[in-house]
Length: 198
Ligand code: GTP
Ligand code: MG
Image 1: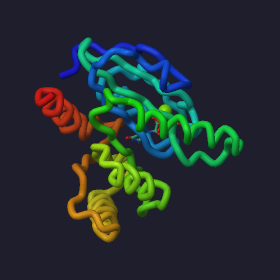
Image 2: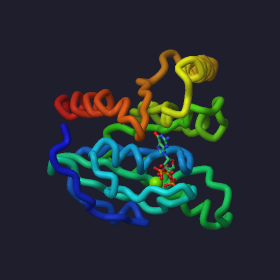
Image 3: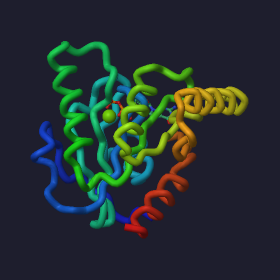
Image 4: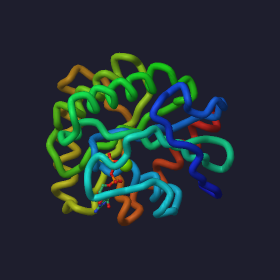
């Protein structure tokens, strides 16, 4: 259960992120996939993380303190086309540095838009996390926009695609909607289980 959630800090550099050793859970994925929205849904606070219809809203690493005990982290989206080459390179370095330096990171939720077929940019990102043995789970977002049949079909296509990549097991999968609140309970339970085993 989340009792309290508050914004801590936004950073454009990993070295400036909070020094405390509180465990943290990061949300990453393509621009506009719903990273900020899911943080707001999980915390029941529509204004906590800034969301936008326009992709590329989150450009910084944003820490939110939950129950005074752990953090949710809203990361910039990858794969946003409408930024300069220079800015894209900077964001890429920022994200890479976050994953390689942040010892507090205990799990990453990779968000995938449930409406689409597997996209190289996401699959490559997942493969990189796997190769580096960073723990992660996959969250299929915006399931409210699909019929049950489409949704089951898309998710099973995704699973097969991951297995085709040479994965022996698929990572934990969640289905979520920031609109209906579906998947919140499962994601929070997952976080609580990890926290209680730390
Ligand atoms: P960037 O910060 O730009 O990388 O985007 P983001 O991944 O944080 O996405 P954000 O949460 O800002 O959501 C993008 C748009 O999708 C907004 O218009 C949201 O209202 C919408 N959205 C997010 N999640 C859902 C969902 O589960 N269902 C529906 N229907 N819309 C959603
Ligand atoms: Mg965002």
